[in-house]
Image 1 (cartoon, rainbow, N blue to C red):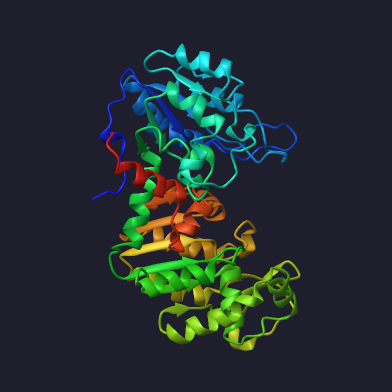
Image 2 (image 1 turned 45 degrees about the horizontal axis):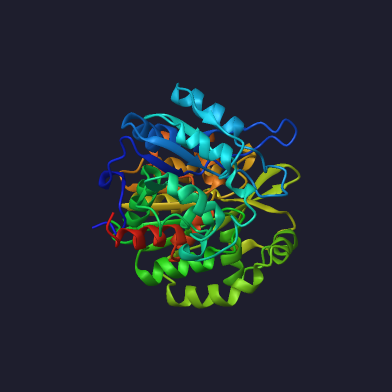
Length: 409
């Protein structure tokens, strides 16, 4: 049983529906144009199309960038892209909750879509608070009376207790949109009751969450085995006592990852048979790939990938899996010389019959580069929210929906 309500639980025809989406997109720093419309397209082809076809009056709440940053922009071009994707007019107003926005909302007809201004125009938007506290803001107080339903479809922002994420849930019937629902169901499938064996593959350059994720999924029993690569693999090797060489050890110090070593040591002692680290690595030797067994380290050259033997060993483990979660590439896959590990692992996952879930910006970029998008069971567009979910943390946006579900709608 779901703890939250979905679009299946509400009738939207003739009703004003506030929809919090995640349109936050990469922006060209020079032209200020959107470089990738993946997130806009995802919402358009699911929740927004369903609402429009059902005759709802759709009011979109979204953010772009952080106030003061170069990618903090109005949502006019987001509305234009949405219009192109949905092949129907999409209205836009450069106002969030004052008279221009209110008038535009009141003039909506069934099936029409209106994009309001960047929610982060409101100075209090990013202030963390309870749903009840945020419900008292002028943002919510001005918009809520004009709407009949709130839909949270922004899983990627659900780890933030921001006004537009949780503030409408105490005062409006609130449900999960299709993206939110799909993310939660897919993540629950690998965390709550995964098919066995369940394999987690942790890589990438951002390794500061790797200990907490590994500890949570192993202690909870969500993972039978954790495979490590990228910088994650390097810090786990360092925790085993390996001297990786000056360039790599300096990188680990610079990233302030060495403080994780006591915790990783303790985890590996407890779960020694459930954590795999590289048995060989690929270094950048004057622009050329050179593979070195871990037992022959240290090296004076930077480590940029797992080695061929490691890739084969990990592939053998993946072959046995019924559930697979991957977050982070195995190396610097953008450089063809060092793409072997990432490509081999992703191709093995793509060819598996296991339920596979992939997440993280670099993971998605690698999947796209190798043309494997349609061979992964579920690709999560979330970043921080995905990581926090995998660490077992409660997401404020989800908790707010669950609480709203306990009230009569």
